[in-house]
Image (cartoon, rainbow, N blue to C red; front, side):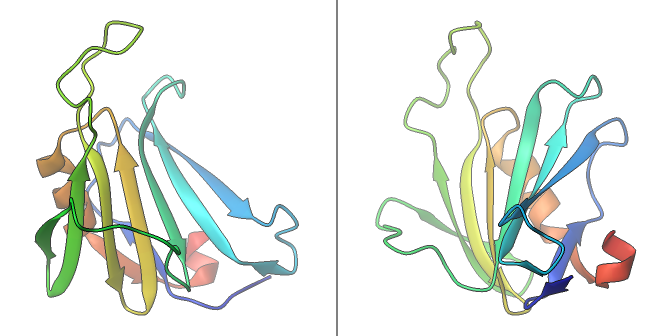
Length: 136
Protein backbone atom coordinates (compact mmCIF):
# COMPACT_ATOMS: atom_id res chain seq x y z
CA UNK A 1 0.00 0.00 0.00
CA UNK A 2 1.34 3.42 -0.90
CA UNK A 3 0.38 7.00 -0.18
CA UNK A 4 2.18 9.77 -2.09
CA UNK A 5 1.61 12.51 0.50
CA UNK A 6 2.15 13.04 4.21
CA UNK A 7 -0.50 11.66 6.56
CA UNK A 8 -1.69 14.09 9.22
CA UNK A 9 -3.51 13.06 12.39
CA UNK A 10 -4.88 15.39 15.09
CA UNK A 11 -3.72 15.18 18.70
CA UNK A 12 -6.76 17.11 19.94
CA UNK A 13 -10.04 15.21 19.61
CA UNK A 14 -12.42 14.21 22.38
CA UNK A 15 -11.40 10.85 23.85
CA UNK A 16 -14.89 9.36 23.44
CA UNK A 17 -15.00 9.92 19.66
CA UNK A 18 -14.46 6.90 17.42
CA UNK A 19 -12.51 6.90 14.16
CA UNK A 20 -13.45 5.47 10.78
CA UNK A 21 -10.97 5.69 7.90
CA UNK A 22 -12.35 5.89 4.36
CA UNK A 23 -9.79 5.33 1.58
CA UNK A 24 -10.19 6.11 -2.12
CA UNK A 25 -10.14 4.35 -4.42
CA UNK A 26 -11.64 1.54 -2.41
CA UNK A 27 -8.91 -0.85 -3.62
CA UNK A 28 -6.50 0.50 -1.03
CA UNK A 29 -4.19 -2.52 -1.17
CA UNK A 30 -2.13 -0.86 -3.89
CA UNK A 31 -2.40 2.92 -3.82
CA UNK A 32 -4.44 5.42 -1.81
CA UNK A 33 -5.26 8.55 -3.85
CA UNK A 34 -6.92 10.29 -0.89
CA UNK A 35 -8.65 9.40 2.34
CA UNK A 36 -10.96 10.81 4.96
CA UNK A 37 -10.78 10.47 8.72
CA UNK A 38 -14.36 10.30 10.02
CA UNK A 39 -14.51 11.12 13.71
CA UNK A 40 -17.82 9.83 15.03
CA UNK A 41 -19.63 10.43 18.33
CA UNK A 42 -19.22 7.98 21.23
CA UNK A 43 -22.10 5.84 19.91
CA UNK A 44 -20.47 5.70 16.45
CA UNK A 45 -23.64 7.05 14.82
CA UNK A 46 -23.09 10.78 14.20
CA UNK A 47 -20.26 12.25 12.14
CA UNK A 48 -18.67 14.94 14.28
CA UNK A 49 -15.93 15.97 11.85
CA UNK A 50 -14.48 14.68 8.61
CA UNK A 51 -10.88 15.38 7.61
CA UNK A 52 -10.00 14.63 3.99
CA UNK A 53 -6.38 14.50 2.85
CA UNK A 54 -4.91 14.38 -0.66
CA UNK A 55 -1.83 15.28 -2.68
CA UNK A 56 -3.66 17.62 -5.06
CA UNK A 57 -6.09 20.40 -4.14
CA UNK A 58 -9.75 20.25 -5.06
CA UNK A 59 -10.44 21.82 -8.41
CA UNK A 60 -12.86 24.75 -8.71
CA UNK A 61 -12.78 25.83 -5.07
CA UNK A 62 -14.14 29.35 -4.69
CA UNK A 63 -12.53 30.98 -1.67
CA UNK A 64 -14.09 34.41 -2.25
CA UNK A 65 -16.58 33.87 0.61
CA UNK A 66 -14.02 32.30 2.94
CA UNK A 67 -12.32 33.88 5.92
CA UNK A 68 -8.54 33.56 6.06
CA UNK A 69 -7.42 31.83 9.27
CA UNK A 70 -4.06 30.83 10.73
CA UNK A 71 -3.34 27.16 11.30
CA UNK A 72 0.00 27.31 13.04
CA UNK A 73 2.34 28.62 10.31
CA UNK A 74 -0.08 27.67 7.51
CA UNK A 75 -2.68 29.85 5.82
CA UNK A 76 -6.16 28.34 5.90
CA UNK A 77 -9.62 29.32 4.80
CA UNK A 78 -12.83 28.81 6.72
CA UNK A 79 -16.33 29.07 5.32
CA UNK A 80 -19.38 28.69 7.57
CA UNK A 81 -22.39 26.80 6.27
CA UNK A 82 -25.03 29.03 4.71
CA UNK A 83 -27.60 27.71 7.19
CA UNK A 84 -25.30 27.87 10.24
CA UNK A 85 -27.25 28.68 13.39
CA UNK A 86 -30.44 27.04 12.11
CA UNK A 87 -31.94 23.73 13.17
CA UNK A 88 -31.72 20.72 10.87
CA UNK A 89 -34.58 18.28 10.18
CA UNK A 90 -33.79 16.46 13.43
CA UNK A 91 -33.93 19.68 15.43
CA UNK A 92 -30.15 19.85 15.97
CA UNK A 93 -28.24 23.12 15.66
CA UNK A 94 -26.12 23.45 12.53
CA UNK A 95 -22.68 24.87 13.27
CA UNK A 96 -19.16 24.67 11.87
CA UNK A 97 -18.41 24.75 8.17
CA UNK A 98 -15.54 23.86 5.86
CA UNK A 99 -11.87 24.52 6.57
CA UNK A 100 -9.17 24.24 3.86
CA UNK A 101 -5.38 24.39 4.19
CA UNK A 102 -2.12 22.87 2.97
CA UNK A 103 0.29 21.41 5.52
CA UNK A 104 3.53 19.55 4.90
CA UNK A 105 2.65 18.97 1.25
CA UNK A 106 -0.83 17.61 2.00
CA UNK A 107 -4.07 19.37 1.09
CA UNK A 108 -6.54 19.08 3.95
CA UNK A 109 -10.28 19.74 3.95
CA UNK A 110 -12.12 19.56 7.27
CA UNK A 111 -15.90 19.74 7.46
CA UNK A 112 -18.41 19.62 10.28
CA UNK A 113 -21.97 20.66 10.96
CA UNK A 114 -21.76 19.51 14.60
CA UNK A 115 -18.83 21.35 16.15
CA UNK A 116 -18.09 25.10 16.17
CA UNK A 117 -15.39 26.88 14.21
CA UNK A 118 -13.14 27.28 17.28
CA UNK A 119 -13.09 23.54 17.93
CA UNK A 120 -12.42 22.86 14.25
CA UNK A 121 -9.45 25.24 14.39
CA UNK A 122 -8.16 23.62 17.60
CA UNK A 123 -8.26 20.21 15.91
CA UNK A 124 -6.59 21.58 12.75
CA UNK A 125 -3.83 23.22 14.78
CA UNK A 126 -3.10 19.88 16.48
CA UNK A 127 -2.52 17.99 13.20
CA UNK A 128 0.88 16.25 13.02
CA UNK A 129 2.58 14.11 10.37
CA UNK A 130 2.61 10.39 11.23
CA UNK A 131 4.26 7.39 9.63
CA UNK A 132 2.00 5.21 7.47
CA UNK A 133 2.73 2.20 9.69
CA UNK A 134 1.73 4.19 12.81
CA UNK A 135 -1.45 5.19 11.06
CA UNK A 136 -2.63 1.68 10.27
